[in-house]
Length: 616
Image (cartoon, rainbow, N blue to C red):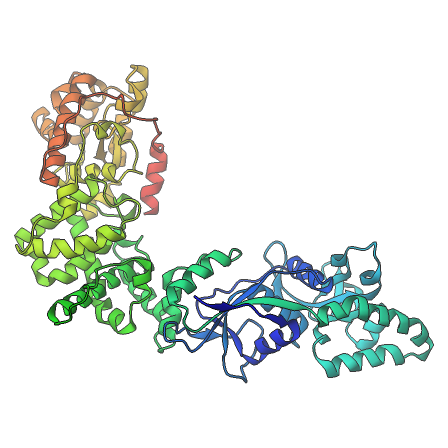
């Protein structure tokens, strides 16, 4: 990645910004330095101190095409674009507006309140070695006054050149405009002949000791040449742009597609609004959608290669960043509508697994290959055998906890392997083959931070678990209406009172999905005490209530007797059976021990759980 490192005259650099020869790539986000930071920047330059390096990219290369935009404060471009500014936006924007523009600087105060400011140098303070240079630079409001008492009292007025002369302050926005600068200087020295003798030596010192630093200031730059690939631009930007917001591939592709007249941001916002209508999809991000698109695009490239006669290495299916950055607009538009429907189909698939909202989604990342697999299978995804296999693949990913961390390779492999497997044209995918669940993991699944924890929660509802009082099948409607959440079976207070160890007390084995109102009815009592209350509230016979409890993979007899040890052992086995059925393979049986349970981590209070439900 060759580059040049020239030094630019600050005046020429700002001139190029103003003419449009230097612009920003469209992915650069707008944000402004505050007033005090701009003053500090101006002070550093007036002292000849370094302010860092700017980085720019030559335009015209085949690998990088970004839609450009003018820096803030530049009204129109009258020269053709030559360089895109990758790093240094805030410094050059601040310097252009303060030193070159004929408009006040748009900035903020320390609290974020919007301000407009003209910047001045106090001539005497700038020449005083005992004064801090930042104290010599100050900004004034747009009418060039300084006011107090809620703007009712003017304490300083620089609204005319004569008032600036009398106050011995120099307007910095004239510095690089030779004609205006010369006129101001001449008037300053001659407008009042009685003061010329006093002002001339002062001005000469000010020009040689202060203004010359500004006029002769050189700013070092790194210029990336036209051959720089798009991925390198992304990496470089993230490494050097430490003051801004981290860049992702969505911003880069937005700028790339904009050069072809396509607004990716607006397109995604429209699709996102559609996806957000499904509560389980509300966490889907724009980069997820691009990764799914890239999976399909690279799969199509691979398929096209296999039909050709070329004897080279076949391209791989991928959704890594470098491949997302190569996603062509024609490929994106080809798959975007299909993928939108694929994600909507995925929400229906999730609902069938009794996953109804984003906070209960075990892995957001697993939806990326799932939506792409749906597009790959088309209508075949909805037949009985396909649904059965997709369900096994999904639960192997969740309960095998295979979609945490970096998952791009697994996503690509699953798209490549699941589609033929479902169509009886290939072996079981590696995700299904590799997935294992160790019985001892039940002791360490204590909070909803765990994907497997969320998975068991959903499986309990899917297998027919109903609320003990409402006795209604849990579906999309009843889940939200009844404020279903996961709660203790032997209450936490009872467990603490009866010295039940935290590992078993907080394990998923001692949790089940119930309505919020039912959980409040249970309170902190033993099942011996709360079950009669539940029985009366449900209006059910003992046999009917026992059947409802049994559907939660619970032995009713152990609850009625208040025998925690017996309850825990029987439910441990029942949950392992449930997990084995979902994964299509037996869990690895460990001894029932909490030796590896790890540090105990509290669940949110039930009131917090209620708030979570209300916010979802």
